[in-house]
Length: 259
Image 1 (tube, rainbow, N blue to C red):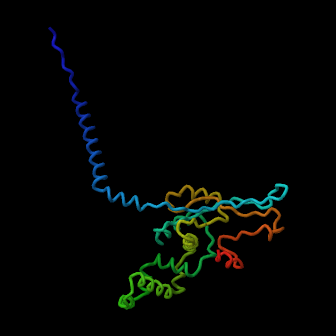
Image 2: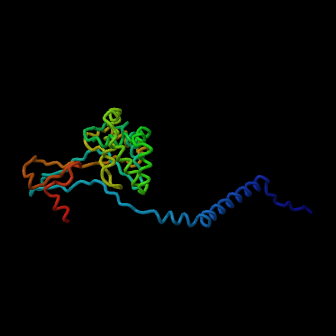
Image 3: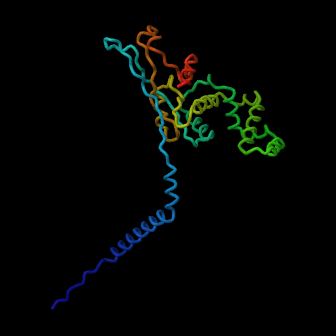
């Protein structure tokens, strides 16, 4: 009579089952830690998350005559925008502006003296600190002001004491960075600001698009320029659209504020 052979599980298969068991055990343990130990923390973090609405430029409506011919149109043009968050710091904006300056050319005609002084303080912190003496800082602290008020007064004193010689340290390339940062800082948080929408070359548009990962807040998009087919004919009837740097027409300011 032949004896029946017992089925034997290979040793390697036993090891495999054991490893799988350990992995599942580790997974269950980690899940327990996340849900039980850190559950309250992650719940609060989830509650802090908010949905924010970000506006983007869209084309205005076209205007036709009675024969359905376009008399006012929109011309698309390349544009580079920057949207800062509510927690963005000046140093963060400056870093993005520096990187962006490598890829685009930006006119510096809008740069103001205040822009240059703010940049000088950000980039030359040791020299800026020396503009306000230790005694002056101690005097401010003794006035019973809050730290925020003290910092504000120190900043104002520093601005006043920056000399023309100090500003001459700023190079031409730095002026481009300042011009870019000037556009980034304009407007409100979560609202895209036009960094450049005139004369953006295809190369600039492509290079910036390629490096968006290293430029947080920057985006390449399309801006729209109003085009009047018949020039100034009936311009007063068809209406005008102000440029980004012009804002609301002065003669209509009271009308808009009253709404």
